Amino acid sequence: MDKNKIKILPENIANKIAAGEVVQRPESVVKELLENSVDAGARNIDLIVKRAGKVFIQIVDDGEGMTEDDALLSLQRHATSKIFTYEDLEAISTYGFRGEALSSIAAVSQIEIKTHLPTEEVGTYLRTDDGINISKEKGAYPKGTSIIVKNLFFNTPARRNFMKSDATELKHIIETFKREALSQPSISFKLYNDDDLIFDLPAGSKEDRIKAVFAENMLDALVEVKELTDFINMTGYTAKPNFLKKNKGDQYLYVNNRYVISKQINHAVFNAYEHLLEKGDYPFFVLFLDLDPKRVDINVHPSKLEIKFEDERDVYNFVHAVIKKSISSHDLVPTMSFVDNKNENEKLAYNSFVKLNRNDFSDRPALDNKNISFRHTDYNKTSLSDNEIDALFGSLNMDNRKQVISSTDTPGLQEKEYKETEVDATDKTKNQQGMESSFIIQLHNKYILSQIRSGLMIIDQHVAHERILYEKALRAFDANMPFSQQLLFSQTIKVDAGEYAMLKELQPFLTKLGFEIRFFSKDTIVIDGVPQDVKLGTEEAILLDILEEYNKNQKERNQGDQDSLAASFACKAAIKAGDKLSDREMRLLVDQLFATSIPYTCPHGRPIVIKIPLDEFDKRFGRTS
Ligand code: ADP
Ligand code: MG
Image (tube, rainbow, N blue to C red):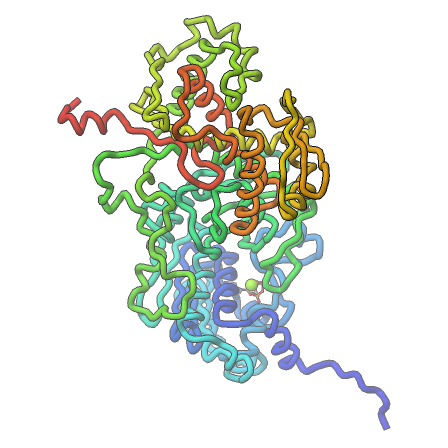
């Protein structure tokens, strides 16, 4: 009796098993076919699906095609034209390399391949129901390759039953189609579902493609990202903070032009938005990271959606810093118009699915909001260029420098850092703007009005100061150099058990902020010093307010302790609406505001600055020029 028990699996069974990893649903077939056509150098790719790909998926490309022998080989496992040695993998420029897509697909469907090399008289037609028994014909076919995948999972009932509704499967197909299309703007793509043309994307630039895939005015909602270094490049677009979208599906990340999913990179981007993001908000982005293929491992998973960076931490920091710079260097000051913004084209028609309205999408979870959600619908237009904004803030800074005088009467506005600029400040010729921007007034002790080149700028004094203090607090946490003003008379205050425990817990941070606290007994603490920004006489109230706000923040948002504390401190210590400010204080506030990293929105996402352009006044007054 044969005691051996191990047998090599028959090829068709091995292929079926491998298919389990590669082909999970119609969308996986679509992904593999699209990528093969791109790899084959196609300029035009048509994708045709029926019943969301469950019964029929066809790809038609005008790529390089296959000889008869190659076509036969393509159906075998581990048959690929894309790598020959393992080292090739380190410099891979094609999507494919595992040579197992077509064999896997063939194992679980009925597949037909028509392929015709541009240089040959006749082409090849292959057909197989199991990937093993192949029938063959010769004929004249269009140049390129056409592959039809019928009755997916017809021979694997478990998989077949696992497929979701047509709407769900189609949603996945569309998502994959968009991912591929976004990374290959120079290829024209079409997608038909049940004979409806649902996407028609002509070849063009990356920008053209973004518009065609999402919305004609999509770019208005985005900030360009572009950072080229020796080690890594990042290009693409990310959402302006005012156009954030509650939808996790809209992040497109490409590493060496391959769509990938990376929690770390997403996190790096989200983090760069700080508190511009409400809980549940995710910024839309289309980002392309390019780096030496040797520094990424793409062969972590058969679907190649996961990757591993060699220097995970560096990439994270790079992405974080670049996104932060991109969103903060951009003009995000909303323009106010007196005229009601009912005008349709002011709104961003987020039309990624408008072409699909004939289909049933009842079970799609994230697609029901056709419009990108605006946090501040009334202020969604921006119009100043970067240069203008530089000029504008430049002129303000000049003015401020002229005004620098030591001040202690409003502790909220510290001037120390600005003193060194005093010298050149007196030099009037430095004000190259040559414009009278010296006027600055306070409206109802609440808003600061100032002339800017393009018209009028209005700043909400409380949120402006909040932003300044918030960033200052974060810096204080980092710097570990507490700076506090000593109280002439230490203050003893009574706290309840909860407050006491919280103070104990937060003490290290509070100390860094400048609070000097002693724990006296179970319900008594003593304040010896407070941060410079705390108005004398309000120490106790502010400390307790901060605790309360911190508590609230912790519950409502999932901020880290430090961020939350910084935001609470900023909110409570900031000057309030109703506080009268002197001319000098207003200028300092403006100056400090524009020295922050994101002077446009407060830590809670409210706008800080709006501007009314001069033509808006002209329009109102019926002036033609
Ligand atoms: P891989 O893409 O990993 O090489 P596949 O199983 O997807 O493996 O494809 C096997 C081979 O078939 C490819 O290497 C390629 O040579 C050929 N091939 C597949 N699709 C096409 C196509 N649309 N045009 C030309 N050649 C193709
Ligand atoms: Mg492939």
